[in-house]
Length: 443
Image (cartoon, rainbow, N blue to C red; front, side, top):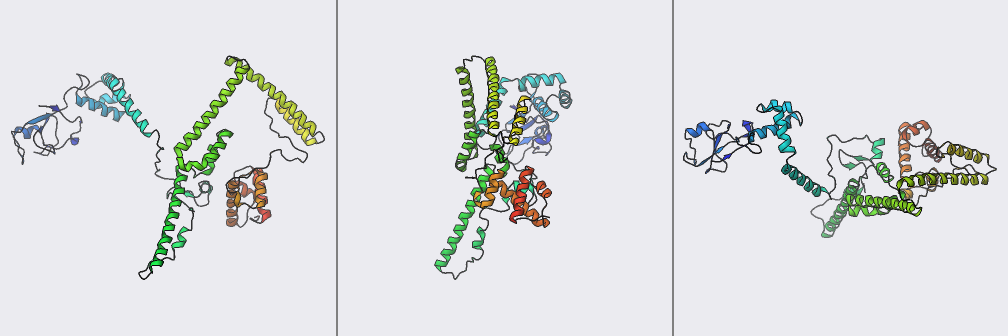
């Protein structure tokens, strides 16, 4: 006779009795010779000698019960399961509610037993730790799975969010305008008929094969965009800018290989290079301390303070030489005085020096290699260089202003500023340029 059984308290979780079809209550009988499926009987049917098909009343049997201790002599297996179910229902720490649901143990007994055998038990702790480590090792080198939301965003056509997402429609997982958007046009006039010659049939099949290759290229590009998170280009560019300039240059160089190594490996490479750059910079700083004879961090703080003071003095001398160079320019003198006042008050100098022509000292933006440069004419390139605006952003702003102008029949500067959330001076220059070149009209 074995003392084994289900640990659940709910009778509906147990199979019904084969004799009377009632829910089984512990203890109940299991035939050791019949099955599968297992043949269960309640005590009443067993005492009557119930027989059914191959089952005979003289078969060997097992008594199924959970009325035996597992972890503690004073706790039965049924009470262990009742405790776990009560903690799951009431929440960890609500021991009074747990005790009320169990009915057979007090609040203190429930808390003490649970903490001793399920929290502080070394056997369970090591098992859970091994399971956690195995799960972490399983997912360590795999990409984070994407779970679609119940209600993905549905930006309206030509809205600001839609433009930021490059026309991507999350609910359909497609773009408004696909890569090679007119690939289907080559198939619109093809019709396979029975009287086609072999050459004509082969030619039509070749066109279909070419179309399939174009579809594969479209899907490949969409997969790269999704895997690397390139749908929102502006957000992607902001993430790039958090790296130092040296790491950004590497990011730009290695971007073409991202499609080969995959998103996770590419991010790991960039992050490891960023960490290497930080370590090299910290090592260089510590070597500078050692060269200066500094042996503790207290002295290093004093050294940094004195170094900052020397840099400020050098900056003052540099600004003085600059203002002497433009001594005949009253505007440059005024700017130097304002910068000097900022430095004396402990603020960082915010006013740039001006040349004799009054133009800012910032050089024009170099458009070499920037995406979208080939789509600009010479005047647009000159505008982007002077305004220091990347071609991709300019084309996006230009498209938004053109669409709004076509809708309204004209466009005012205030509407352009509300549509483009950038520096108002840059917006004014773009607006004036588009008016001057005839792209848009004033309202």
